Length: 297
Image (cartoon, rainbow, N blue to C red):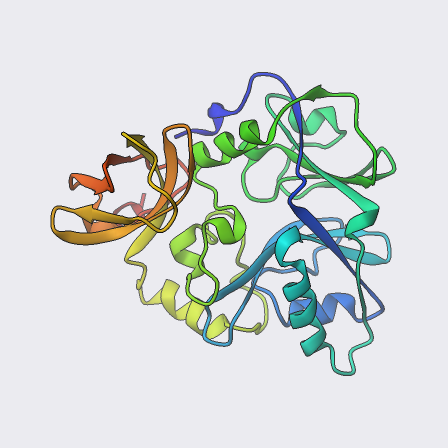
């Protein structure tokens, strides 16, 4: 799968399933820096980051977007209350204020050729710019994912309209996880799910919650499974369906649509004849994924 799989025309996709928290105060950067997997101290740069358990297991992922004297955390709408609660737990005496501002924003993705240019961005992942009374940022994970917008509630930019299905198919083709649709809370490990290659982990920053296990997983070569796109030949298996290589368990299906899904697959089973329910699965390794045998490439 290549990043050229994106649509040929810049397309605006409303993302109704997104929430927004605002973190303000003089210690907002230092506070978040000690909690999440990525470096949030880069000025004028959006990043994708995860909040982990102390044991290094996935809890939340979200975008951190600078907006003047605050940081906007674009997260899953359905799980924002839990993220808010967890961040409040860590607040203690930090000079920060946390607010749920979801009702003030409309979230969009802009995909297709020229997507970043259409909203005034240079195209480099993570670039941030003011746009239509809100904020535009180039998706910090992959250039092929285009741009994202956080605009005043009710705003609709004058761009060709698309649907969530357009966005979902693009990110499935590129093999990019969509929060808790693809990562299991309290269980998933970042490096099995592409966070290293997708710029979701900063290896040169200070300590954060769950750092020890994340670093050990990388430097000891402990990644034995990867979340990958799979072509589905047959009925689409529901999320949670076991992937089988003959009689042996080889993984688990996650989200999917229209003959394509993401599945967590054992690396030693990638060449096997894989099935899930009544369907046959054929792994499609994206260009950005670094499998162990390609580490020196």
